[in-house]
Length: 533
Image (cartoon, rainbow, N blue to C red):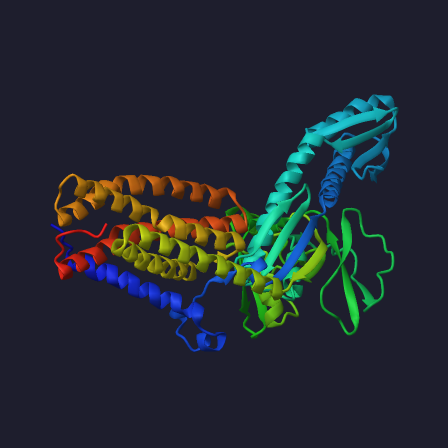
């Protein structure tokens, strides 16, 4: 006997009503949407090829990282040679014709060659070291360099993604291209100037001590800093902000006391004077180092260095035990927010250069949307006609379910704030064809029951029951494929996977619940003695 409980009846009708409600904003104008409540204003996001936007190609400067590694190696080598009392000359970094930097120096005698090589290997076991007479050359192992570059690219992609997400751009496409390039697609962003500024800043923050043995240099704004030798182990860095039309350069020790990698959180706040500042919070390691640094340097000045510029140079007044700090400077609210955003997103491990930039106009997107709409409408009409011709009244019921399938699909995409791409439109067209597969299986089962002499209502019940296992199994395998596409795909492929997976889940609901409800209501009203199949 065909029966359906009251709670199932109202649940099915409620889901269909909510689908209509949440799909409706996609039909409203932008002005009308602004007057809608926030919970009812979500629409489907359009991808770059549909909506238009900006396309950026970034290059990761891997040579800078190799040179920085050797610069750190140079300082440690100098310290090691002096401790072992090994005489040397010409300790410097050379760049060969292939662009690969190397560390070179000369020792004073043959007896010092093996000692110097041992010092280098103790510092970094991945170095390739060879000597020509008294000249020793060290380069980073090629395999180690490749692994390091791979890690730098992956870290850069993740940092760029976090920065773009923080800027409010919806559903960007960020992926690797080649060995040292990153593709960034920003749907709906016609002028990516602000995003480029956020992406391009390295945001590498360090805490270092100010060398108090030499006074600061004051240089007129706009003038280059005159050559002045900094004390050994220190360097002059410019302090952000103007001092009566002049730029102040402070001698800062090269040794990094606390690295920005230990930063946990950064928020734009206001200090007691009502000025915008950036509050910092370190992890346990950074907090401990910060406490030791403040304890050993009370009443001394230290520098907060961001991208080789001093953003603030305060004095340790007390020991900082709680791992919290604060960057103060001549910030306005926007600058404080931008700096906090950069620090939260993390430091780029290497500089990025924009080598290609183009804007995709909305005209192409409008043509694609129109073609996609046409393809969807044609697919819907053909499938609907096929079902009606093959199954008559029951085919008409399947067509009603197909309409709600599309409504619920658009409602789901709107609620998920998913991005609709050209492959996503293909997924919708595919969903239309797959949506009636379950109905075909059910109707064929019902036909088999009727041919076996089963009564109409019992045949309907048996048809749904016997077809359910096959329907669930076939859709589950397709759902697994969609999940794999979403996990390992990028950009448009993920858009296809989302629409396909959502369409499968909705098809199960419309085929197993909605069409069954329609058939039950129809059968009770008509009191059928024979099924029109």
